[in-house]
Length: 176
Image (tube, rainbow, N blue to C red; front, side, top):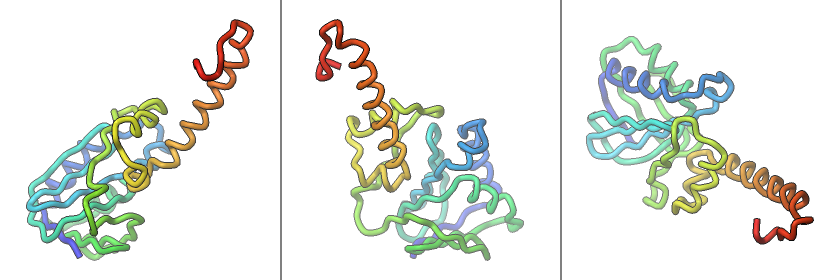
């Protein structure tokens, strides 16, 4: 179990700053994952395009992910001055509210890196992640693995289409 204790107003301000990085499209914004990293006396909140850290009283270290808008709404509804958040293997307790978290990291540090994506990232940005040294586990942890697979499939389809159009000029698929 890992806990952090912070000022509710400060946490909500941090989340408001992060919300500015969300896509304007509501369906895309709904799918944005918030990554929360807890280390000694700091909590870091990250979404694609923005990362903010706040000082907090912490016990333990971990990383977890949750839907940004879900977490934002829960914190927005908190009425107390301070808030304690407890993270377990399968759930997160925020005050009196308990929500399940799909991925929580406790055991080793192989996926502790935050994935650095620009605010309005493209398929090309997703594809570059593997060349930048991120592991498949990191992509899965940050819920980017499916986006990577789809972007890779689309790129391969587009390469094949380009090959079909350019083969009359002697261009090979390998050259593309």
